[in-house]
Length: 181
Image 1: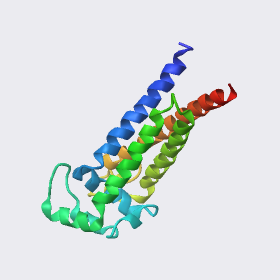
Image 2 (image 1 turned 90 degrees about the vertical axis):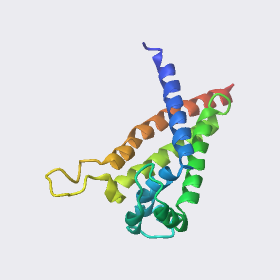
Image 3 (image 1 turned 135 degrees about the horizontal axis):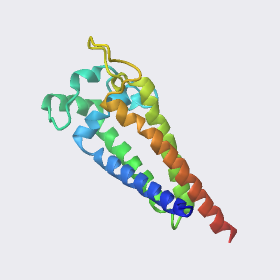
């Protein structure tokens, strides 16, 4: 069992790569691009990418899989789709950086640092995005600490953050071992 740490780190890295490439690639899909609008529009770090201010997006949200042509036009003018494609490309890029650990551990270490920072920004959505908390619809169950589906999506980045630190340390160690030879 004591030697399982190597496998655990490799599995952690593989998990990060799969999640980053998959989620990043999904950003080209309209439903995914539409779905991140509340996070981006409410973020002081990212809202400038969009043409329309929060909370205007609330009138133009689509359920996942609903093409809603009337809302599509609004998302086009909001720059929702180019932003999502750019963000997805960056996320896929981070995954690819982690995937070169064996050959370029210094690149993988930087990629892991970037994933850590990305996760920190994503976790900030718990503060900036109203849609992450169960709304007050008249019942006793609402607000903090009750997460909506969007909130549960965000809070998982706490695990990604830790995993990124593990892979960053491992890649840095591999790089330093290589340089010491």
